[in-house]
Image 1: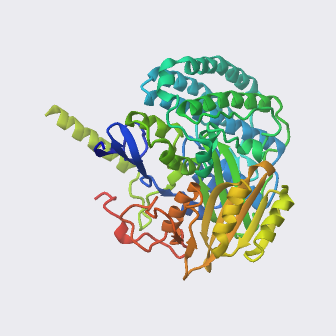
Image 2: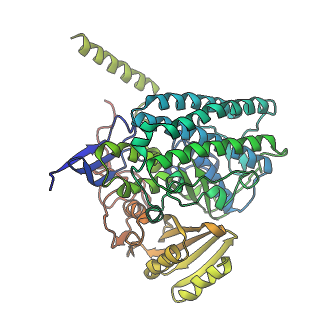
Image 3: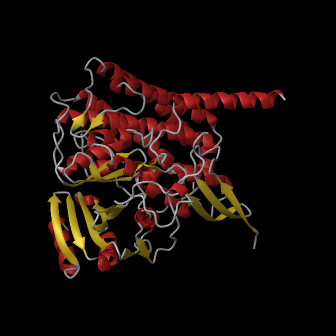
Length: 394
Length: 158
């Protein structure tokens, strides 16, 4: 038997960019056991949300994650509306759908770029991120922000789309298609990507069900589940689109599912903007009665789940956030074991992990005082630069 | 099976353990069950009805600790939440992690956040809280107010 060695990855690993600690047990090149430790980034958003009013909470949970910055408010506002229960105005539904799908495109492109980077294929990375700028521009035209759109509120949306922006947005979305098509062809044909991703890190259908995996991770394993199709909400049942499902469950399939989903998102955005109905955008919610509600949204990484309990006051009595990575990350136990150590990083990255969504916590001093203000941070950074300069000049 | 058949099958099969059914909305049902029959009912819902386990929500109502296990049956647009109520002096319940892997992490999270003990869980380590967090301090309990002073290390500036 080969000698067993333990290889630590993290908590601050140059590739994974967020703090996470993986302990790989290897025999030679093969991974025989893996364990993960999370919690380096825990921010207590659930507790924080209980101290805010329903309207303020939206802003707090929008900051759970910069990439899924609309998925959490989407699910949360649906949960609050489910407490009553009520329907939002038709125009607000279309606006929500457009924002949600725009986010899916930019998140998938971000992942595609990172996947290319993980594989040492930086051309994919640069193309994908260049394309991502285009979609961020679109989001900026529509909402005023590149991320953290601040568009959602319980009962509707905060801001309307301007009708003069829509032709420009449609033109921009249309111009993304050829580049996306090129990326798609490049990925499908490329022998390097095939060698690195085909048959690597397979998650079977039974395992996907057992681990309760979500989103592209489970759809690549043949589990045809998508909240947008199964429990239709917003405008998803008013437009034509297909659910992308593949059956191999390896990294390549997860890649393909994400790329094809972007085409579907473009279809949804185009149809929504062309058929945008008129009318109110906000139902003007006055008070929220005691009760409980559940809201879900198919975020780019999988289903985002929020549970809200109201006791009749203006802040939630309990707010439970379940990000998709919380269910997807444990699948490493099934996918990484038996693979070589060089493939472990891309397998761990293939679920598109998002640790800030999973962990949700903040640092707060007991006395309630701020530990650092803006001035302190500037001073600290200047001191650090000065220190570095001195050591270099020595 | 359609929606009514599913609900009546749960009610009939586990008539001893179902306390009450709250039919809130056409796609939401809350079922109050006895804690000791949780594994049996959850196994039926997950394996036989083919539901997907969303997540569990643990919450402190000041008198009791409640856990809601949310399951979704996607084909018919139905979300079933199994609710168990635990007395605060006896916070023990059987673990679902041996039945399906998806329950593993959330039980670890509820254990450290609310102090619920899951009997039969394969790996009850801390998930989210730091290693130096004091034992017996549960951040999501209603009576929790401030951090333990000893839990904070030198994070401030002089």
